[in-house]
Image 1: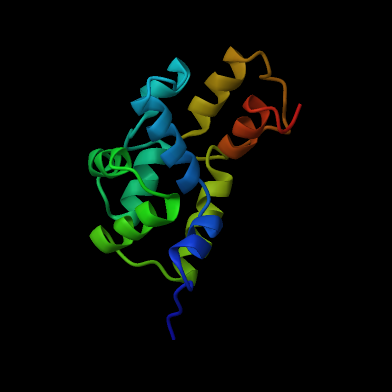
Image 2 (image 1 turned 60 degrees about the vertical axis):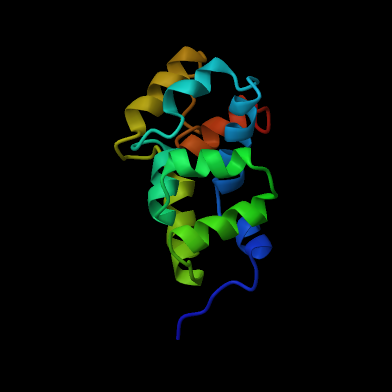
Length: 141
C-alpha cells in the first residue's frame, strides 16, 4: 500500500534541501544571494535542478511561484499539484540521495573545487555537499 505524508508541512520538514532551495530563490529575488551561488541556480546537474526534476516541476516555474509569496508548505503543495505526488518511499529515496550528494558521483568534482576555494581540500570529513554547506554556514568548523 502506498502511504502519503499527512500534510505538506510534514513533508517539507522531511524533504531534505527543498526549504534551502526556496530560501536561495527568495534571496536571489531580493538581490541578497551571495554571488557564489548564482552559477548553480536551477542548474540541471546541481541540487536545484535535480530536486525540481524529482518533483517534476521546472525550476523557472518554481521561481515564479516563489515570487508570488507563500510558505514553504504552500509552495511544496503547488509542486505536488503541478508535478507529482510523493509518498514515504519517494521521500526515503530523495533524502538518501540528497544526503550523499557529492560523494562518489558526478558532483564530486564541484565539491572538491569548492573545498579548494575555501582552503579545506585536506578535510576528509567534508565528503558531501551537505557537509560542505554545514561547514560554509558555520554549523561545523
